[in-house]
Length: 124
Image (cartoon, rainbow, N blue to C red):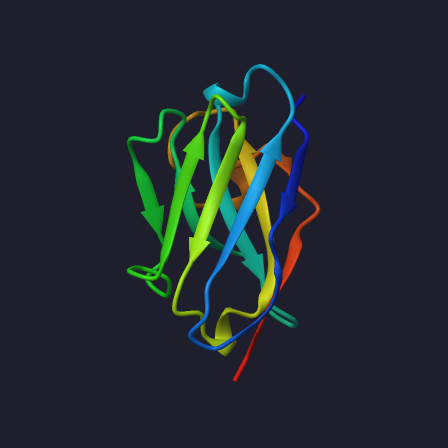
């Protein structure tokens, strides 16, 4: 079992930055791939970024490439999402997820554990 708790969301102006954190419980965190997803009102949940178990492979959605960076610290059981140059269209609930497979995956079906989510609101 892995429990995930996100933090770092909030209200920011367009062009600003936020860093989301996802703290995981359990000694097996380092074996899991991690992903950040977001869901805006009236839209489906979508992948934002993903990272494999060792941090050597990453994936970014086209909409965030060059602006967002995913990273992980296995010693701290934490995964991060640094978000720069935020846009109003980034407004959503951001959730982290853990996948037993260990490798980068982009489908929600490939993730086994989910956090509750944290709201990110970008004002224009």
